[in-house]
Length: 115
Image (tube, rainbow, N blue to C red; front, side, top):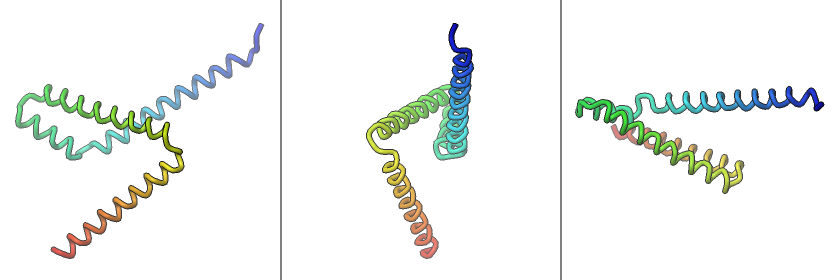
């Protein structure tokens, strides 16, 4: 009447999928939450709310904007994942980040020297 181990294998797969889901969800939430905390977008939202006196409308607008930009990021990320090899994309991302870092450090030194 069937293999007695088949149910235990399905349970393990379900457990792995569930833990992977929550792990990815938690990692995504915490990364985005910390990155957005006290950034220029949050400060702009704070100022708009203070000026308009209508915090619910500002919240809805800001939430829709964040959802839209996140959706755009996910869609572009999916397109990149489907069209570029992972190794090439990882290398290109690293080069871009290093270049930006070098540029920002250089600009910081130039500004420091000029003042």
